[in-house]
Image (cartoon, rainbow, N blue to C red):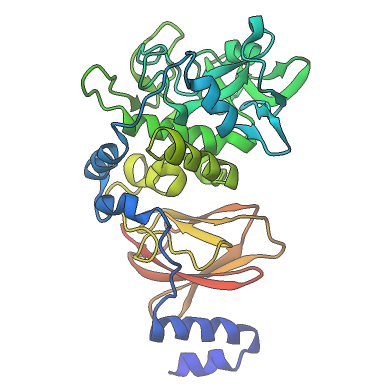
Length: 372
């Protein structure tokens, strides 16, 4: 009590204390579960390979469309999923962001083509129905950029070379030394979530390949069914949060065409629970104890965690900060939020329950479980 009385006398900390006491007395006010929670309910409270297997069951057996046909094919679907909101007659190219005439399908190499984000030679599935035509990882692309990307692994370039699209600097890069490709910043998370989807959707059933993630950078002739670089993709998933473009695209594919969803767009924290630092813990999404979202302003994940958490905000806020309290209400750590995704190192904290309070336009508090 003496600690609380002294804290009350410090007016600069009064609001923080009130918020903390409210949490202790009335628990954390969680947001409603995602509207898609019923779709994923059978995967709740699972972890690691068990979680991956259940998600696979949920998203497999989707409706397949031909790559090219006089009936509805991949070209037709991409014209809708990747439509330019500012010009419905155009599609947006993945690695450049350019808007081009949707009617110009290939057009002798002068139009746009279809990028297999999981390179079709990584598993040698070509344009076969299933992995070769799965629109969750197919995106419009300029032909020259498609050739440049080829089947390169996704990674941060070190010896960077700009990728040029018809004289336009795309913002994407290749590594002049290593066989890798780095997409422009705005779609790094998109790419990661498409790769994660493929590694869960295709598990070697029937004639389908068993696609897996790797840390290795393979040569262009290696057709092993693996793609990387896993650690980089996990980082991009955290640094480039899901946006409305991805959500809309996911919904169109689910509701109008394939009948399955990309789980990593609906719940991006799943990447850490299946491929990252949270494989020891069960997944309990919002309104339980996973990502706890009071509003659209902040997200905190992974939770539980071992080493760190990410505080994600939809738009960068000026002078935003955080304070971490231990179970007794004593401040343990504080700092500033930087950009839209701040990595908060928790390695100096002992195992236990903590509360992280983030203060932007609206003060919010999240319960975090730290495990060694």
